[in-house]
Amino acid sequence: MMKLVFLLTSVLALISCGRKDGSNSASRSGTGNVNGAYQGTAPLTGIVTIMGDCGASVANIYLGTAYGSTSIGSAMNIPSGGRFSFALQPGNYTMMAQAGACTVSGNVVAGNYGGNSDYQVCLGSCGGAGGYAFKAASKPAQLNKQPFCEWNVYGCNGAFYPGTGGVTIAESRVLFLTKKDTSFNLDVAFNQGNNLVLSVPALPAAGWDLTAGADGSLKHDKIDYGGLSYGAQVDETKLQSTNGFCDQRGKILARMTDYLKVSGFSERSINAFSRNWADRLPVNEELCVYPQEEGHIRQLINYKASVGLEIRRLWFLVIPRLETAVNKIRPIPESFAAFKQKPRNDALAMAKKNPLNRSVANTTELSAEEIGMGFLLER
Image (tube, rainbow, N blue to C red):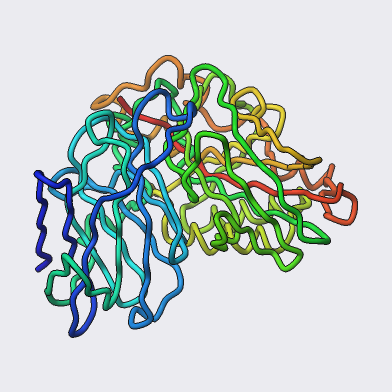
């Protein structure tokens, strides 16, 4: 059993650790920066430390409801020393972190009355002041099923997010490609009706100061994250519902990777996407996918870079067959009406007829590839 300790007087969370024989802790300290992309909320932010006895170099963060029974969000592949942030409705939540053999869990506060300080999340034999001893722990099964959100009938529960958009981009991964090390600032602008939900590394008030390496690294504050990851809540009315493809859950990820290949994305980006979403898709028997290209994404979110940057973006909006969902229990809102039927055109067949060349060899000095996964929000 995991032990949860939360000291309200000092806003200090002592968190259990999945190690064989030692002690560990997580505390809250420091000051986080609030970026306007968070829509005025004070985001829940944290810093991860991973010790050698965990046997891993990156950690995954899972947020759940106050009693830890339901997963409502996740931030993946955070390196030791890395910062993360979540924008949630103000309230009490459960936060878990896992890196190899180590697992920690505890209570956290999010939103405007959560303050602007970092949760210090330490995995492994951290010891030190405030350390607390306990035995190995594991993630509750409920958080394993849908680690990206609380899944309802046809989408994610939107009650925990502060924005108004009808679609959650559960995670979008941005990888940078360059022929020489390049330092630059990158900020993100959200059009009205769209907002940030999570960010790795945490998005500072003035944007990220980054260094992209020719070796594929991406450093922020001297920590190599490998790439950027963010989640967002976006306006569903700006997304296309005409072109797509449907298949059984066990086959749909392969169809998405095929689409990425014919769309010219690099093997590095495709492999990262496939690894990240293997076994994480909704459990519905049949899923339909609506690829969202740059023309739709730019109506929602745009980047501001201090150097010349060419970026190619693609999101997959994944929706169960709505005409077979339990619509009598939870009626489909009118704004989702366009997604009630199968896509009219086969997007994969169309892409194969008109393949795109997105090779870095044909790009500017600094380029990036972004691939995201999105779902409808139920409210």
